[in-house]
Length: 355
Image (cartoon, rainbow, N blue to C red; front, top):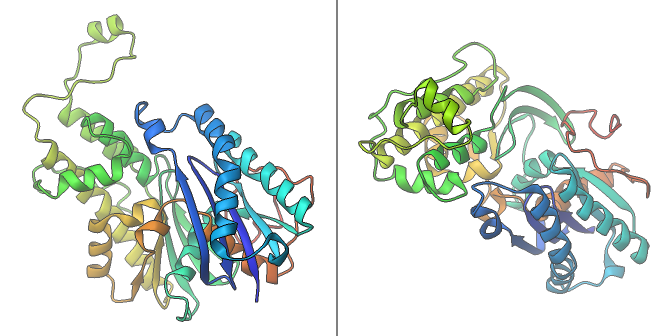
């Protein structure tokens, strides 16, 4: 049996968890900063790192207490090394080093994206996942399609060329005057809207598996906001947010935007699953909580579609500890000089080419 303490601070959640054998959650504690950043309409990096410093110790202590084990019972300390906000990552990595050193335990730096992948291993602890599988990671900072042939063996098929899916949700949410974060609030508005009211573009309709959402975001802006003249743009200095047109139905725009984004994700995911003859589709990340995306992917796929429960879709430390279990068994150990890697890609060589 392995017991791993995971720590996650890649963005605006301070999280810690203890996972048994990579499948069973002994504890999972998350301190969210949503209320802190809502006034800015997005995550403010400097404030995020300061909030992590304040929350780090009590969150970790609560996770260990809730797990019913002592630090001496742990096999390793795992922490998100990247990708993410550099200041936030530094808080988690430095705290994890202190815990590992004090407890005399190995230190493992884990890729945040791999953590999202392994959130699927926590959903049904008794069910085996048979490779190869297709993984769709959709979150505020990432939109990736990965072919996973075995534990730690990935082939990146495609990803976003500009905005991530969650980023597009947040930006359109701000245009519509909806609270942060945009994803759940757009989904809520869309439930009372007409998805056919606006014919927004479905970008990257080609044979690749890449996504592009900046054009969709721009199309929404041009459709629903008052477009100033060149003279007015000069006078306002380009800093004032565009004004929403008075005749616009927020619910209809939300529904139409969501439908366009979901269609793009689903079409390429289903096509890739067929082309690579996978056993099932795994979907993870914050946007995987979107009910329209879940329903559309299940409806279009001939294969089983799995996604985490809502509490494991967004950033958490349980997924980091779950991923660390398999890396721990594979012999991964990091030195005390391990640094953060804010732009760390996920591939089969992730843990071999960290620098």
